[in-house]
Image (spheres, rainbow, N blue to C red):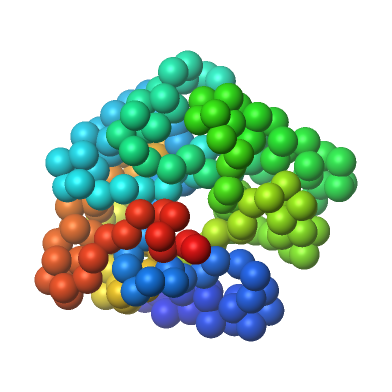
Length: 212
């Protein structure tokens, strides 16, 4: 069985990297979606979020934006926020400084072209980072956003996700994924999250209000 530490790295992380956003600052739940966009999964996620009236922070991969055309505009049209998840979704800790910056810049350029605004939020692929990664994001005007509730939905086992939701708190940053790895459970994962939030009398917040 998974330990709380594996679901919530923020206890140690907040001490070592206090500048990272590990939890929300307004006692609301922030839903974050990694690896967007995906031609099959993204439309389903958007439909479910629209019905539930939940705003999410979509961390997008640059190469996926190029491959899916205007799909990123549909995310914007539904009033969600776009975040930078690098261009190639690789371990940024292994890169030289110039390659690290290139990964961030190429993704941000695509996102900014779609939104017409600077990109404010960054999440390193796999949650792997070091001081160079965090500093590079800050230099680009982006806050690094991690999470306080990892659901393990990418293992495609709804029972693991349900177990993870036991650790849901009123200031949780929850991460789910927008890719084929969890395609068979993403719908149930979202509905179960909504159920847990309602059962505990929690509320969802928008990215900007949760991360200010």
